[in-house]
Image (cartoon, rainbow over all chains, first blue to last red; front, side):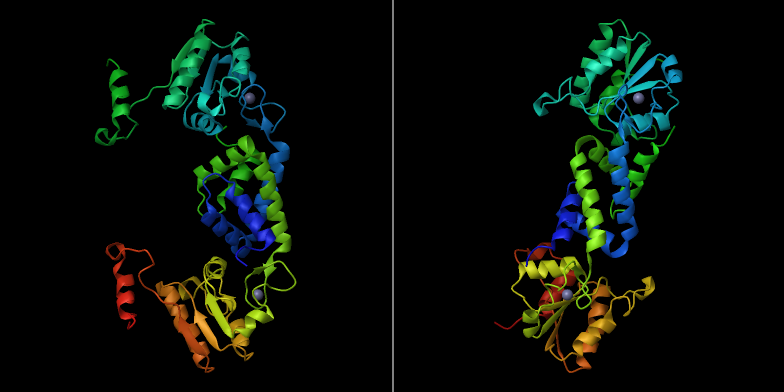
Length: 199
Length: 199
Ligand SMILES: [Zn+2]
Ligand SMILES: [Zn+2]
């Protein structure tokens, strides 16, 4: 008598597989969907089905893609001659929505992490090399995160470009706009100081 | 170019309707489901459909129920003559799994909150009154939460029982087992002190 009825238990179990959802919140979500927002349950069920059947990966940039031609791999974007490598789809979105960058992207879907079995193959680097070999890339912009693994990945990517005489750049790290120095961590400050610009 | 493709956006929007899920975590969940755990997406989609079509409410106790006869409203449970009123399904589960109580339940699915338009009707109190009028209830155990609204609800419920000459009890509030006095809030301590027992 100490467990939920089968369907309710299955719903709670399925919700628990979402990242960041523990047993308590899965329960709360299930009750919310059943008790207060059945419409949301219906929407979510439908959206999941549609997403599974209709969202794939662009073979060129590895971004999620549901159309014949990827909006991020257009000929117009290739003309800029720039290829920006990011760790995940959210990074791509952040750059595309928040900056004026309109070149192409390559989404690693992760970062090099040998201990977790994530090597060049898992990040699609053979595909990236094929892109670099196409000849249109004049600059590889590396926008991996400023973490230990992100930096190691950046180093590896830089070598791929350099061996092909392609210019490589790394996005700048430093004090964020509007940030106050006294609240910024030491690593960021060190970066900001060593990457200082002459005015 | 600043938004996701339609299906992906719909999935993110649907995930945002889950309680406690903001835009960032909805995004993270969607990417996780699409990139790393498509099986989970499938399970969740299926579980939602099954839950919507197969989980209803027990007309007697208001607990979620997917069978012909409610496991919490059995004749055996009625024989104890006890009816325990809780605010939500999770409370019922906590009591049933964590204690030896084997009487019946009534799930309010909320608490009295006139400002939010939640009155006796919304909590199914007419149904509760009908139960009390059946004659088998010898004790109404009120297990609403020790919040302002939970206490107000408890007071209201107690009146319903008293007007029918049914014994009413309220679960005890005090220092939790294993709790250390110095870390317990004042309200709880005051409760623990005033509800002290002679040894
Ligand atoms: Zn693409
Ligand atoms: Zn029932």
